[in-house]
Length: 117
Image (tube, rainbow, N blue to C red; front, side, top):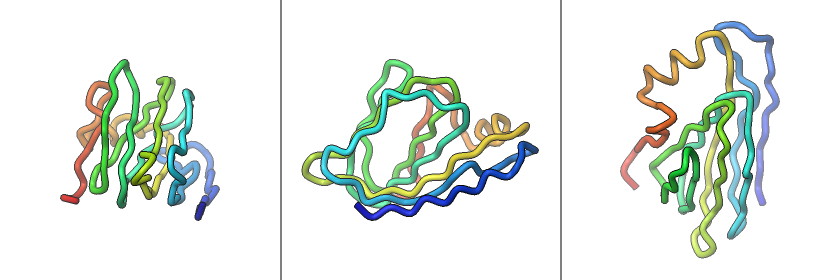
């Protein structure tokens, strides 16, 4: 498992990075169920897996991303045959919710296609 994890907590202000990194997941690698107190965006570089939140399951692949919202129970898991490689950034701050909304995300719409795979 190759992992880079940068801890960059800077005090709370308009927007602060909590941590960021990348990971080439092992087959079946999973995280959760978990609840966080910050936003967390994953951008899938390659591979596939699934993400669960707000009672829905999303099957995702390279070129897509998913937003995890604060105080929401989430779970995600890499595929057994083609596990995902993703980058992530976690952030919070006084205007984080506003920026996430402007980017087109909501609790009911947490998926974004960032590039065709």
